[in-house]
Image (cartoon, rainbow, N blue to C red; front, side):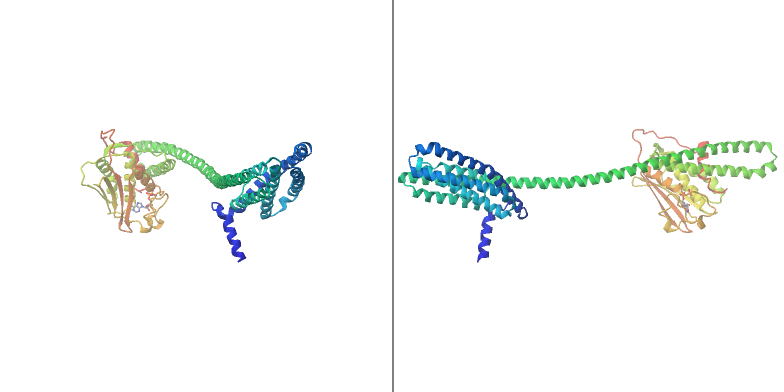
Length: 512
Ligand code: ADP
């Protein structure tokens, strides 16, 4: 029974707190209590001062002009009692209030207001007796409704008590019926007005409390986000610093390789020029038999120089690709003619090794934009690999065809082939198939990776189909597009010293 009553009281008491989450209610009441306490302090002090002044007035003025001696005595008693009451209460509140529990604090504050209201009612009664006016209670009720934050139960209890007790007290005063009715109307009006002011006051406080909580939560959230952001910025800065250090290292590596490769090329060119001169001079100066005996050595000098030259070129290109400096110079050319010319230029060499080479196409002419030098290099590399890994009596078939906006160039041989587990890796750098299969065949494993980069720079792809001991087929696929801004078609022929040098370099790995 008691528990049910307690529950009902709680429900009524908290019914106007629905907008405040239950976990924030303690904070809410703490705030209300501290606000009310802070407002009671100056009020208590001013009531002490007022009582003191009233006492002086009692002795100096009212005593002489007071119409009703009983009223004067009563007022005097009340002023003395008020002065003592507020002095004692103020001292007690000052020393003990902060030690009380929250509920007790609330109880003390409400009791203080009730007592103050009651005191005011008594004063009012006396002033009615003396002057026929009930001003103190009106002022006190208005002040209470305006200054204190009271929830609905406190509010109704306080002002209800004031209303009932004041009306009862008024009945004890002998007045005309009209005056009594007038006082009742004033008190009723005052009750509703105070309830309304107090309700507005309370609602504003609740709204402010909720807004403050939202702001506090937002600030907390912002704080968290800020911390997270700072952490991420820190992480990114560190990653960036590391990446920068990596880039610096990469730059150093690129410049080292480029310098090294250039340093290689210059002496090789000198050796090659000297070899050519020597070959020419010795051929004319020496008797045929003597010349024949050193011809092989001269040939080796040339072959190994070209091989070194190839390695240096591949290393330079590899570093340029890494650094992103490996650009294309596109020209519109007839790709059928380019492929055919290259095949023709190597045909005699290939056939001298007992390998048949065939060029096949169903397209007469196909104009497209490519970097001719780089495409030449790619095709020559595939051809040199095909020759390298195809035994005597083998066949190399180069075919070119167009399909759905793409040009396909296939270099197919029936040589030693590539194990299926290696076909994905051979386009990676430095990858060479097992030494037992490729023994006696030179190379650095860079060629195909550079070919792949060249083709990808053109927007194309390269793939391989191979079966061990049956042969391999490398298929280049290039998007068929032409340069619109320069629609002239460049003439092409694979001849002259530059082309010969390129051929010698690309085929330098093959023993002759
Ligand atoms: P390298 O510069 O040494 O020739 P590549 O990158 O051109 O290197 O080739 C990588 C490896 O792929 C070769 O060492 C060889 O094992 C394999 N390979 C390439 N082309 C063929 C082919 N036509 N037949 C068999 N193996 C090949």
